[in-house]
Amino acid sequence: MATWHFARVALTGVALACFAGLAQASEPVGTGPSSGAPIQVVGSDSGSRFVQLGIGKSVVIDLPRDIKDVLVAEPKFANAVVRSTRRAYLIGVAVGQTNIYFFDAEGKQIAGFDVAVTRDLNGVRAMLQKLLPNSDVRIDGVGDGVMLSGSVANASESQRAHDVASRLVGSADKVVNNLTIRGRDQVMLKVTVAEVQRDIIKQLGIDLNASLSYGTAVLNFNNANPFTALGTPLVEGNAATFGFKGVSATLRAMERAGVIRTLAEPNLTAISGESASFLAGGEFPVVGGISCQGTVCTPSVVFKKFGVSLNFTPLVLSEGRISLRVMTEVSELSNEGALTQGNLSIPSLKTRRADTTVEIPSGGALAMAGMIQEQTKQQISGMPGLMQVPVLGTLFKSRDYVNRQTELMVMVTPYIARVVSQKDLSRPDDGFADSSDPSAILLSRLHKIYGTPNPKGPTTAPVYHGKYGFILD
Image (tube, rainbow, N blue to C red):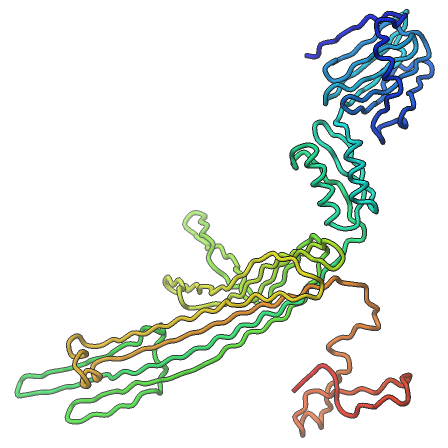
């Protein structure tokens, strides 16, 4: 509950003469009257006016009638000093808000003021004007914090103004940054994602089958050695069978080398400070849970993304300087680590991911390389004891060897995007025309590319003869 404090003021003002030097004090800029100008109250004012003061600052009040009583709601935030019968001063004491009312001899209200006392911001205003002379930055007190408003040229100036205000209040949480950036830049990101996978597989094994009989005794011998390092059985057709006198042997051998090349070149454009994302790939379903209604249960399906994905957030610090956060990921479906339950099989994802934040000039290149992975698997299976026999042990064992090498490289080049004319743009289908039926049937051509030199160009310019365009066979 607020406590109301009443002060009876002597009209002579002799007891308060020590405050005469405050008559020329000024209130903060942008809070009401101009610096040094008193507030004029004309006639009776039954309402209240808003006045903002800095700590230790004052404002002059000129009243139309003689003052008899002064009411200050909370003197610890602001106070009122009467210099004469019709002039008073409002003085800021501490950060807070209060009310001050003036009454005449008949008890009628002469004027009322809602006083908000904030920090003294004149020094900070001068500092911001010195650091950012070409920006329009305004700072106002809000409780025990401050609020920045106006406009700046780029995000770097906004951050500098925020840092100065944070040093004033002692905490960045008490600063409300409401600055707007004039003409926000747009950043285009050119990304090249290149991945090369090399696989080498070698498999060699001998399966023995024998059926020997002596009198009524029969001996059956069967030795089959699986290939387990690859995780998949040997492809049919890579086997040779030979035998003699009830004994047959199957030689299984395979050697395979393969290369997989993945290339993606996405281009994205985003406003400075905003994010953009790109995905070249797809989604595969996985079971996210099972919902049951009575005895009927239905599995819920969740789709997971895979492929080449890119997410970046640019921030233009100044002309030609960009702070860039890049998150890129290359993933593919794999049978390794797959989950199989009954007739349901959920593949796993092999993922290569990179996340970095750098400062780079417009047109500069960032290369994220060194993401090399090499995996070697080798397994020997056979009959215990016999597979350890030198030379002859080869007949009772199999060897499975797998070597995989993967190299991934990501190159990122940011550009500050500028306005371009429509005539300077071209499409992939410019100059494209379908082939005619005779050309498609007789010559197996699916398309034709045509074009003519610019007739408005210089006559001395060399003329190119031949096919040109975007499609290469």
